[in-house]
Length: 174
Image 1 (tube, one colour):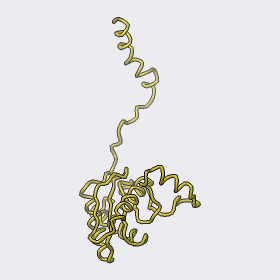
Image 2 (image 1 turned 90 degrees about the vertical axis):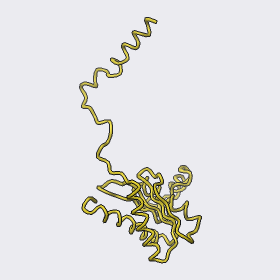
Image 3 (image 1 turned 180 degrees about the vertical axis):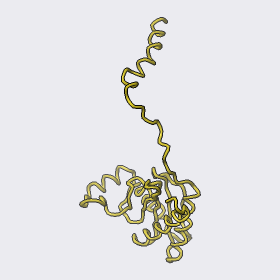
Image 4 (image 1 turned 180 degrees about the horizontal axis):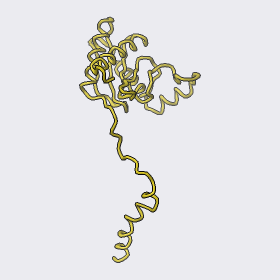
């Protein structure tokens, strides 16, 4: 019983160690972070649906947070069911890679092996199809939109219209 008391009494001293006091204390949490919420995701979604309809498209549209987790989704009437998974994969890819989707790697020479390994390692949540666009506010990627149903270029146009509506709604706080 006595040995346990000594060990427990020494634990706080061991945990702090001699160098903690000499080092600068770093913050334990990040407070200057902008996050996409449901209202913002729905604003992006509504504007994207309007743009798709104006272009005569029947789209699947997914909005995710910065970690690629789904916040809002719509499958417009008549949209292909298979494009639902594609739209989500585009959004996840754009959010987690912090760049628009397209041929990978986007900032270098094509590397087919890299693209295939990423797709397999992610369980199919990564794609190099166009139509995924990150949502950037105050220089931070706060989420992404993925659109499926048109050509890659049309999907990008719909996605950017949705993002622009959010930025317009923020006014000078972009």
